[in-house]
Picture 1 (spheres, rainbow, N blue to C red):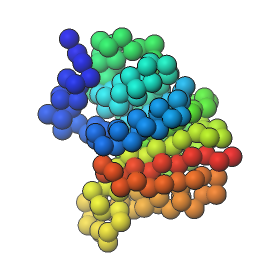
Picture 2: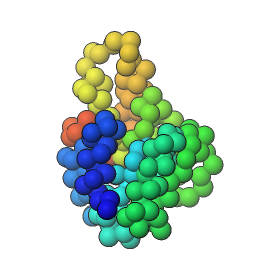
Picture 3: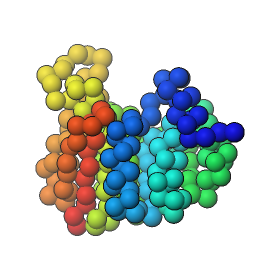
Length: 194
């Protein structure tokens, strides 16, 4: 019998990145306050966060979630099926950079938690897929503290630079109202104003 606890435990044991508990707590508050009907998630992993979001909203939500890794997408689909949430959560397999431009839906909330180097691209598409009042969340925005430090090592430089670019974009765009929260690995919370 699969449970949300098992899914979390397995992800932690296998070092699959999942949403941190304190980040989830803050998102839970946002979900309860905003009651989004449609959510887009960029980066499914094994389905843990989508399942959490659905449970928080008493399954009164529809979630599209995109996953690049074939085996993780397969595992997410199995987890969602075992928890009987396939009416609420739709896993889209493939590269979000290619999939996002094909989507036409407007979402009440978008959760970005995928390739850090692609965050600016994800943001542009997220704004297009949002309506006035939509919330765009970006997880791991401070990336182990590197983003706000003078970190410049070659290994993570691209990701760090793109996350810095994302922060600049969301804080300078007049269409967005943004807060950067220092919880978990950093969470950017933006609301579309127009």
